[in-house]
Image 1 (cartoon, rainbow, N blue to C red):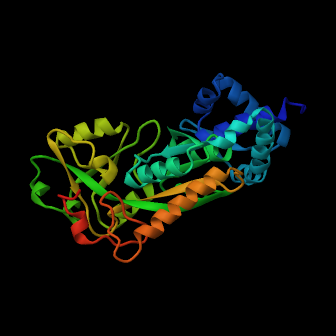
Image 2: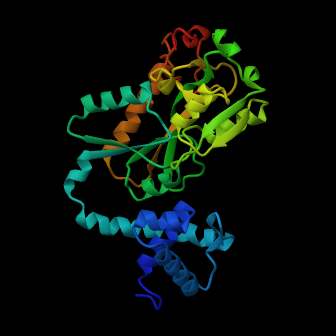
Image 3: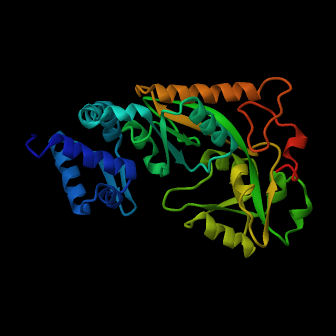
Length: 327
């Protein structure tokens, strides 16, 4: 015990506030009152004689000194939680692989990877769940997930990451739009339009770094919408703008009064990477990663046709493979 309360409890509240950027959201995740989170964060700051967070109406964010301290303590804290968890975790955990999808709809590559893994290692059970973007790294560090497939989420300390596949981007146009007759669109075709990007409770389903590059290269004006994908699609049907999706979504979801059209040229593919904890001892994780690497290598061999749903990292798709008919 510390003079101001249990140290583990104080750290739990502080890390929850950091991960969520909001005392209210942290309280919701911990299933306690917001006042309890605030009180324990203050206790920790008083114990350390250091201001960890800056507070405003939009939430909380770490101070520079707070971030430096958190970076040092985080690994020790996660390791301690893991040590406690190992006491109650049974041996069946080694036979379970927990896969997270963070703003990723899946895709042909991932489907083939999981099917291949299941046939090769039938004794390993798989679970697949969504991960909100704001909780992605925390979920990996705490081993709520063994591996997460996601877009670029910035620096991931103590984690390994690798791009496994890239998906062609499609744009959704109202069916009466003048561009629907074109087989493949370029960003220059959309320069004067409004690109609607859904930002729901769990973040945008699109690669934010890619959107920034698109805007910087003179593409359409990006407008974020506090809405889910279905609401943004409805706005497209009303003629209020256009929106994007990856091939795995566009190929399987037909929209009334609107058409999906493939994009070509620079910044027309979205990269998806796997992220896993370097210290994860499960052989199943390394086996899944190994299979993914083998699939990427096989798709890049000379004379091997690229699948129409994905592009292997570094590969240059041939024009015919990305025609509207093939998509």
